Length: 437
Image (cartoon, rainbow, N blue to C red):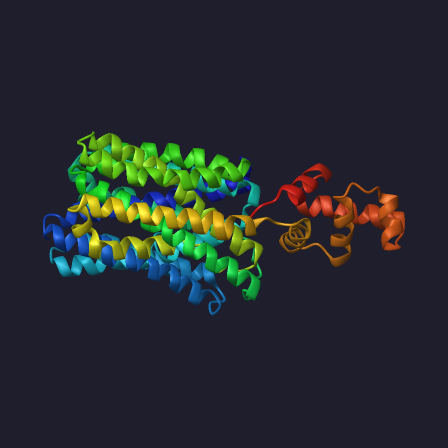
């Protein structure tokens, strides 16, 4: 698990998430001195979230055109950094809003997120949940530590003494290491149907998540409760969800669906006067399951269909939903009964769509897994034929007889398969017969 390769991606995600999350907090708190609550809400939650989504979409559109994607990332990160630095020396609220959106668009919350999630395709599928969750968990802990600093530090230009070095380290890592160039295909008709179903599910999940966490954020009046201690619960949830995603995916799926019940319960508990801090903490813990699900599901889908530039679509959908909810949240927050009804209906639809129309169609055959292994590890056609019989526990001689090749050739192909996949026979059998999307 903690190989040099995995550690590299954990560090990239940790630095990226720490930067975008903490800067978002600092800019919000700085803007309070120059704008009204309504203006901040629109600038941050609506325009900021949409800017992040557009940044991810821009990465997708640029992916097929740009020959040097890493150079594009470097240029856009520099633009985001300049926007972040200039922000703390401006007092006009409209310019501040524009700079905040620029940071969101070009930085690790927008275009950078698209690039970071694309890089997750270099991580083996069996480790992705933990690599992602550990990276994001460390970023959450970093934001928690930022809040422990004096307010005058993280709400002013002094915060740049922390953020700028973080950006420099992030750029150094990405420029220092060579990443695999992953060939991409056009999404086929069969994959498009799965993509459509996954899109509907993630949008429903994002709606439920937003209805819960946005209400909690509005009712949480202090920074420590909204961004500080709750980030530790978020980290704990991420680590648990990441482990289940890698080791017990079926249980993880059920846990994700079940976690949205708290979206309904949180509103009821708030209405009954229970501790806002406790509800906010639990809300962050449960929403982490959705965060891991939307990421891993889309990265795995994109990897298996060789369309890795679409890896951050789950995050993009969430940002769009979070932004649009701003238009309705004032009405919903003030009408708990309506909010409960909306959440209950969305939860019922999600359960029906997931288990009624999507879950049972997601079963993967042995042939599907062999095809995926062939593509992912660049096996030859002959090696994939050998693999097909190898996972059925046939001996080398039996494989030679079935494929009309020599025993020596079979042994050579088997050795090549083991070397390319870095898996032995029992691991290949497990992957082919127990694999899931």
